[in-house]
Amino acid sequence: MTDNSWSEFAVNFTNSPAVGSVTGSSGAFGTGVWTTVDVTPLISSNGLISFGLTTTNNAAFNLASRETGATAPQLVIETQFISTATPSATSLPT
Image (cartoon, rainbow, N blue to C red):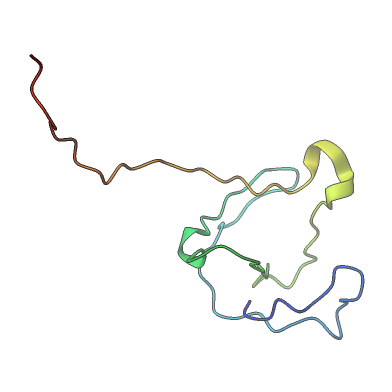
């Protein structure tokens, strides 16, 4: 989503921001099952990022909220440090 101006307590079905193009898909999953979507392509810098979840299914689309405890949605961030420095000798021992 390109619009980050929405508020958790003010957004509803009639005033929700438009969802942009699809960048990932979890595929089909059953009730009570965790699923994963790689959102790495959406992250290009520091700052606020909004995600929109949609479905192509005509059936109900129910998700757990953060208040549900153990089944609350999670954003898992995995990082990897990659050194770009090339070590070099500055002096020889005497």
